[in-house]
Image (cartoon, rainbow, N blue to C red; front, side, top):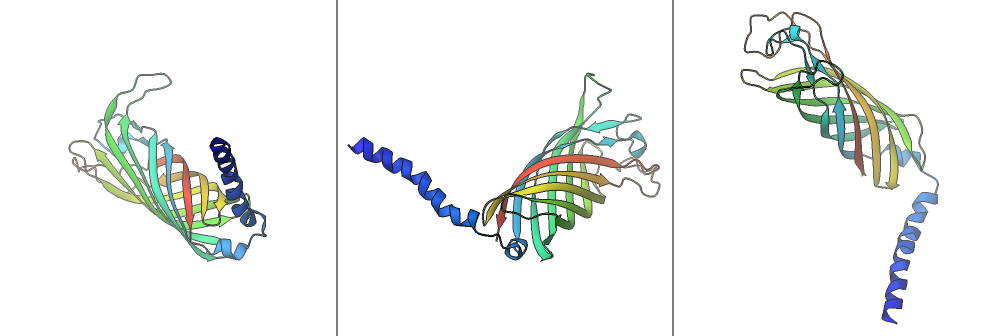
Length: 222
């Protein structure tokens, strides 16, 4: 008898939770409320791409080196500014390393650690709002801190821009999931500095750094 009662209680719990959440899912969405909520989104992702060219640094002689694909993590804080748009402040970091891959299926060698951190401010612009999903585009400007963990090298901060597309899926009024694809551009050009052997970059040419990233985050809305 006790086992039967326990089984019935166990089966009733999910139904009760669904019943409590049903009004939020069935009532008409208030777009003014949804667009005027702050959003804090910690996320994790995978960043790929990027080459440091030999004409930008003498750190590896006359050898171009690749930035190894690896995991990334960050935080996005979005502030409503009207018309359902949000002003976003982005922190996005990758701890990776340099490699000297020569081509498809070629063996690679790890040449030293490399940390890439983006700090950006920009806009999130939704192009549809519903109870099921809110797709959006994002653009931003900021800086990239490039920090090679190699003897004799120093870090450098450069101008950076980014753009992305994503979708937000609500779980409840104050919680959601975000899936996003974002691309980053970092300017590597500057005045010539070819005599600086201990500096990380030699700015005689204009070979810039391009990276892409796929990330997933949990949205906390308030």
